[in-house]
Length: 256
Image (cartoon, rainbow, N blue to C red):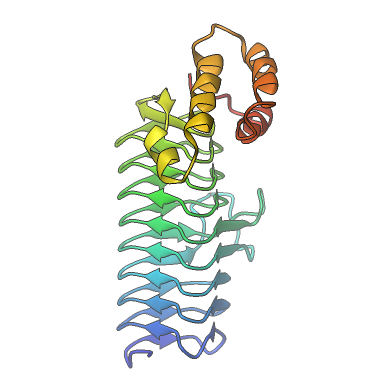
């Protein structure tokens, strides 16, 4: 299960059925859960916790120090949940004490090749990051978001649930839930209709979310006026609740 050329620090905690490929290096303070498979030439440094049933492909670097000049060797962490697929050449850095102290990836995420997740990012569940998408520090990505290839996200931005970004999008502000974003810098282009349909949203819910999008982006309302209208629409469509919550907690402003 562990190749003879792999180098495992004695302080690492590895479940008995974990697979580790040739020439991989596992440092101290690394914990790896049952059923996880690690490819060749992977480097994992700690403190890092990796859950169950993950698939980590060749040449990844996980849990290295944050790329932050303020970092001074503090014992910050990388936390990876269960059931994630992490493809070749991905780089995930640990957190910093200036924020949560941890970079987190939830469960059942599909992360394609050459993805970079910087310090203190917080990733939810069931997301898809296409090849070469990159997150600067302190980015939050909510459940079911999809980042198109070469999407770049500025530090401290938030990406709402069920968002999709087009290939090559550059995002400097928060993207509200359900929105399709594209361009440099990214602009809203309707709701993510295909993604919502695939996840079982009813036609009525999708109709109401399109109405909510028009209220937010097409009505000419100020943001506060739009939020008041959305609060009324919430009575007919509970899915608008996460949109309102997102707008209330946005700190960078939303894409326009």
